[in-house]
Amino acid sequence: HLLSRLPVPRAGASDNDVAQWTDRHETFHRTLLAGCPSKRLLDIALSLRQEAELYRRWSVPMTHDERDVQAEHREIVDAALARDADMASALLRRHLATTKEHLLSSRIHGAVLAASLLDPQRPAN
Image: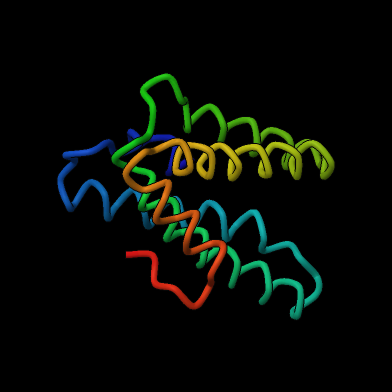
C-alpha cells in the first residue's frame, strides 16, 4: 500500500523522491519474501534481491514511459494475497525480466551490462 502511494521515480527525480521510493520498494520485495519458512532460502533470496537492486537503479534512466511498474506490483500483491504462489512467482519473474530487458536494450548500458554478465570479475561501471 505504501509503495503504491508514490509515483515511480523517472530520470531527473529529486534525490529525496528516489530515496523514499527505493526504501518502500525494498520493503515491498522483502515483505513478499518474509513468509519463507527456510532461513537458508530466505538468505539466498535476500542476497539476490540486493544484487537485483543495482540493475533496477541502472534501469531508471531508461525506463520506458509505457511501463506501468505500479500495475506490475499490484498484480504481484493480488496474486500473493490470493495465495496463488504460481501466479505470484510468474508475475515476479516477468517483473524482473522486464527490467533486465530494458537494460539490455539500452545502447549505452547494454554493452557494459552484457560484458559484466559474461565476465563477473569485470566491473560494470
